[in-house]
Image (tube, rainbow, N blue to C red; front, side):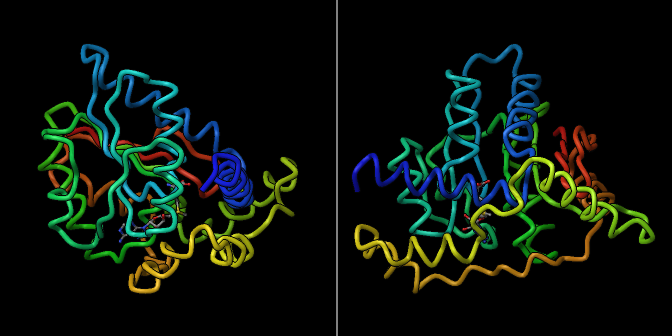
Length: 246
Ligand SMILES: C[S@@+](CC[C@H](N)C(=O)[O-])C[C@H]1O[C@@H](n2cnc3c(N)ncnc32)[C@H](O)[C@@H]1O
């Protein structure tokens, strides 16, 4: 794949994701800020990007923290190929399988684990195990930073978060951006990616996205998993950055 073909798909991916996350760049920046905060005495933090996709968060983190050692993990061969072309060290693994840390070429304990718009794909039981695995793998004082859609806790306000996010998307001019299905239809037809498309047909990646968990449910699960403190640090509508300190 040429650099310009890769960039074409990455640019289209970013526009497509912004349709759903209108303040995505600011949200990436907040994730980087939290990693920097937790590593003020640590010039070379070891960071794992969970569900890295085509490397979106990893590349922003590398720009913000050039001395960090960052490894992305994902289950999707097509997105991993784009991440590799973008210069991201990324490995294939299934985050629903508790053995996934063995696939990460970054010796532990890790200083941070980060994620964007990915962990809502996991079922509740798999997510609880993942949170426990992260608590075991991060150093004391290390952070888990997760940027994702979460339900606002009071049931009466559930629809408000999505309403506010959609209103922001309209104001930001991203509401008519290419959608998820259209991006995938286009990339899967790219002959340059046919080997990865074939490999992808062998992978089963769950994408229900509806765990029913509220943001407070997540914070409770993180404390139960062994994190000493957990909080939100950023919110827009139903879009949150959640931080858990080991
Ligand atoms: C919406 S994409 C987000 C990608 C990237 N983090 C971003 O913000 O652009 C969700 C990613 O999670 C990955 N993913 C979902 N379930 C997974 C699993 N069980 N194991 C590994 N990766 C998974 C998908 O393959 C996909 O790349």
